[in-house]
Image (tube, rainbow, N blue to C red; front, side):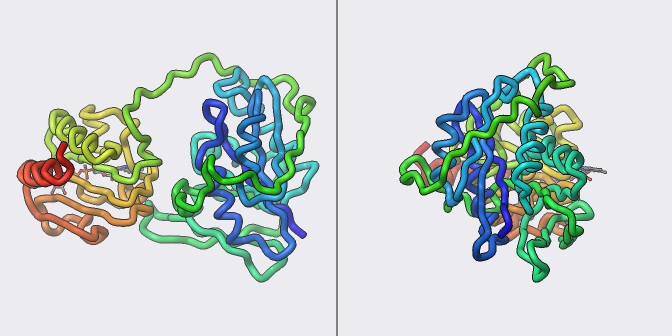
Length: 336
Ligand SMILES: Cc1cc2nc3c(=O)[nH]c(=O)nc-3n(C[C@H](O)[C@H](O)[C@H](O)COP(=O)(O)OP(=O)(O)OC[C@H]3O[C@@H](n4cnc5c(N)ncnc54)[C@H](O)[C@@H]3O)c2cc1C
């Protein structure tokens, strides 16, 4: 019987969506008799651990320590130490984290401490025929190809899962009755001990509305917009549709919009229902960040632009004319 350990995240005292998504992902690899557990870490994880008990898991490991507070002075050192201690004691076969800032920082360091393998940004995972081995799929070559990797026979197999790939609609909310999961306190104080790094300051990124990673609709602009002003127009449309505003790296590098909006290989990964792009050519490094979009709508004046190969709907034309017509129709339909 193997243990699959999920690492949930806590924000403002509550569990974020990623815990539920990991629980769905774990179903892909859990065999009969395997156990799924979730770790919840914070200075006071009581409420978050109770939420985690609503997930389809058998155990919640609740780890409380002042150094695990959000923005705590220990930075990522404390959760790395706590998780490594939990893994050493419970010997999970698989450890899944979200491909978030937290997971991307903590996952590889935990794997390193345990001397095991790590895979970043997985979009699929399945059980292999060999006992307790999993195979993971992740985009490679700037998203131009998908590669399937297998872990060597050393546990735990540690992976981060791209957010929103495992249907977030299946994630239980507050209304879901608490499951049968047992909440177990795990004492990681000795392991956390003195953290070597010290977090001096947290500067919150100024963001308006829904986060890019969580948005159902993302509207992006690229170099084809020609300057910063058109992003204000895109923001208007984004607000009407309740979405999030994105951009290509070219637009961010030009200083037209903050880098926090960048989508792609070196930016954010998004998985919206609809991704609408204005004046973006569709370079592989950009597409690497939006391969999880259910439908891409591209507006570009060049009929041969690469983005049309990936788009479900495309308009060949000047972005401004298309945006004007699109805005008018959306306003008519929504009454905004
Ligand atoms: C290691 C590495 C990492 C990278 N990471 C990223 C990343 O994370 N994200 C990212 O986006 N890029 C990334 N890039 C850069 C990437 O290769 C491209 O250079 C970039 O995506 C291009 O941005 P763009 O599509 O806005 O610009 P361009 O490629 O210049 O395309 C502009 C498009 O606008 C169209 N256009 C022009 N005028 C109009 C108009 N009036 N109306 C409609 N359409 C118009 C043009 O036909 C063209 O297709 C990376 C590159 C490297 C080497």
